[in-house]
Length: 80
Image (cartoon, rainbow, N blue to C red; front, side, top):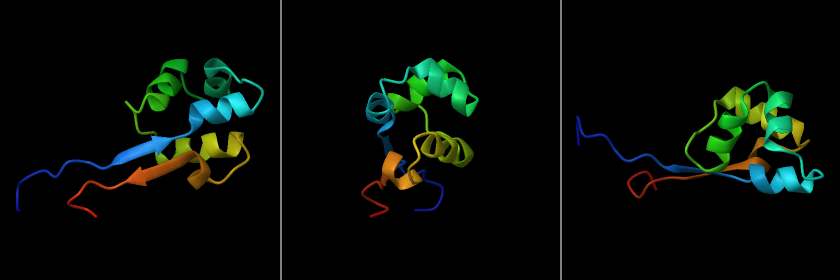
């Protein structure tokens, strides 16, 4: 349909899990390491904020993994 906004897909992340796997790293420590505020990390972990591609890569790099190990995407029904 033209003009009708489709619902967005969902970006999932494993940030919280990966922080704990990395010696119970705090949200503040991760935020400092990647150059954002703690509130940004809190929002991303809760799924209320989708990080920019640059930030997603920085987070993955901090955990020494590929971006796909931290983030995944589930399309909405109309995208699938």
